[in-house]
Length: 184
Image 1: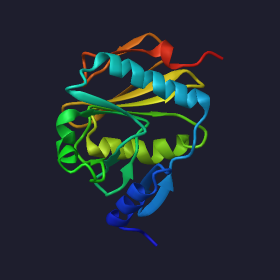
Image 2: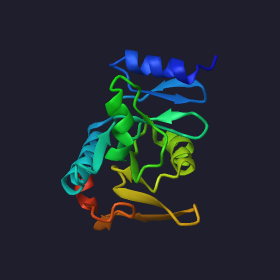
Image 3: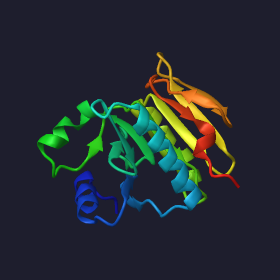
Image 4: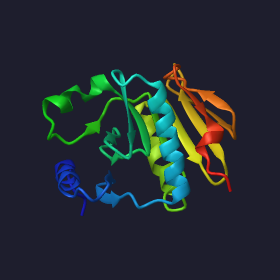
């Protein structure tokens, strides 16, 4: 039986140990991840934190929800949120933290547990939301796939295996790709 958005929000706020998402009216808990996954996500967040002004942006690592047009809510591995979008939550700090507006950057790190789910479910939702730049890090194949929103609303896809990448929507940030992967 599908649950309502209000029930989902209540569960997510009540269960502080879980990391809940809502997909097709059903609760889904993000599973624990491997060291390689967590280290790649942490390194990406650290690089972003060092380069983005904290008065303009917050870098989230498994925090906050983004809501797709169909009502599904997901927790990106990494998200960059403009501080201006946080104003309603600062005014009502007990409010469920969910962002409807497109974000400049979201990223998912591949794992065997969530890889197919991310590609089939989360990435289409991020594109429907209009998020400006969407990354998929594959820490074990040491590959990055990037989708960048174009002025016509379509996304251009590219990939790389190393070097540096300047963010499209946040041009003050350049990410050192080789540092995102744990050596084998």
